Image (cartoon, rainbow, N blue to C red; front, side, top):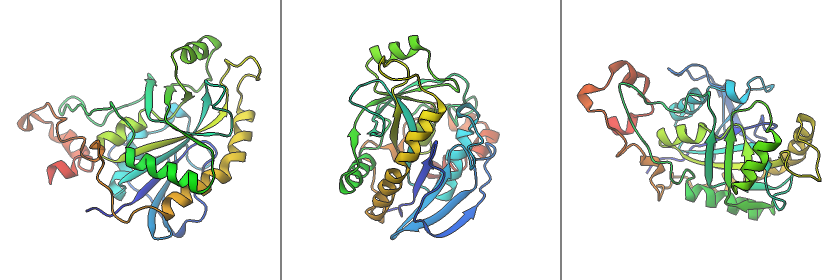
Length: 290
């Protein structure tokens, strides 16, 4: 068994992890460039955790300017076994009102300007994204929300747009018509890269607005988003603290194999793999190479 180390990626408005004891900071170098910020290590109860603000302290990075590969690689090098991503999102359904948390289980990737894989020419690999969320991790998040009486909806489809602009009305109506539940700007390629890195991953989407489809609400703007995010920051902190307090000491093997995603992913023959790329993949491929 592998010791559990939980990585928390904080999105808009979530720039810290209150209650983290025995804190230390570490700058981790990656072959993919600089992560969003220095990693902050500590524990809540007996559970060790690592916190990374996705946009950097002070919200310096736009959704398209985040180095997602460096973030996931740094967490992998730190020994993270499970990632909980927290992000703001818009809602396409009346019942998913601002202030509610949605534990999504599917993604639609509409990004166009981001590096979405660690692999490529010289080492081709295709991991499954049929079920992008690790189910045991999601169940633990849902249990933590219930224990803290935090309103959370289990299941939903998150469409990830490129941004940084908010949706046009035509886009918003199209996504709503397609049956999607929420929209955000950061879950992709984060979830894909976590799968390639064999780290169990789950997203808590904090609803801040109704995008711009809802005739009874103003169009989304930064001020309205921040207002809801600030109101929800206490709930996010309580949810994460309870999750960590109740987290098992050992990483639970994922029933859908998210922590063994590379087992059947490679197409490039070993003798044909690019040594330079393999060197960059040392952390990502550590298990399969050992």
